[in-house]
Image (cartoon, rainbow, N blue to C red; front, side):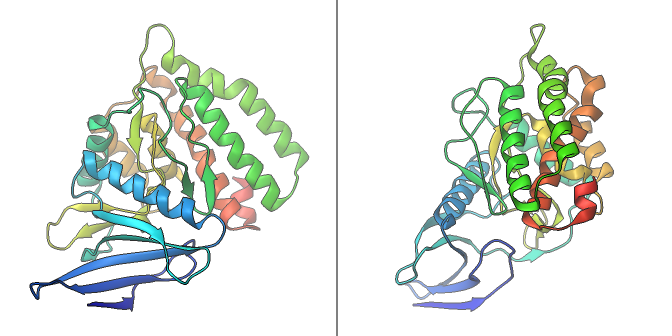
Length: 287
């Protein structure tokens, strides 16, 4: 027997989220969380999140809800679901030290199945599909990722000649200058599993364990510092204290003196995604 009640809200899962109570054959009850997405990319959204959470769980059990499956909703056109364990969460941002350690452990203990940057399936940041094709060059991979979100941004918010000229310079000169040294002069850059959309609304504290929980992931194997680009956003609760705590556990890559430049560069992708997801936000465009 299944019984569901509406639970929570979302900007991108366009139909509903449910807390589902299942009565098993032995009479015990188990709780699940089911979210759905409707539209032409709903299957990509649900499969991408399923694979993201499953991959994170394989490295850091308990850091994400355990997922049980995804698929098409019967009788609901273009509607797909994702089912996972229901967790009682305190929607408080975990403290910097605990949170920094948990995320650093995820990055440190993960291993790319191909040894390259990318992911096994497409994932979505908000409503937009990310190009996750495998690449051995992080500079090239990030340039492709950033370009795709810049093109989405232009399509949503309109052309802006000065901005497009500046982006062309960024792609041709700045990205190689800042990122290519990570894999130059004998340096090896490890592709790390990242959540990919890690801000306070995608975190909480498990009431039963007291440990941090993250969800709504759009994972990829990336430079670990890419994760911290989101934490540079204005107005977010995750900020400089969390970055400092993380770096105590996972120091900056070499050349370390480029860390702040890399952090600023990575933050551009998240700002483009935010502005594309919420068209017309002039403050976001100015940043």
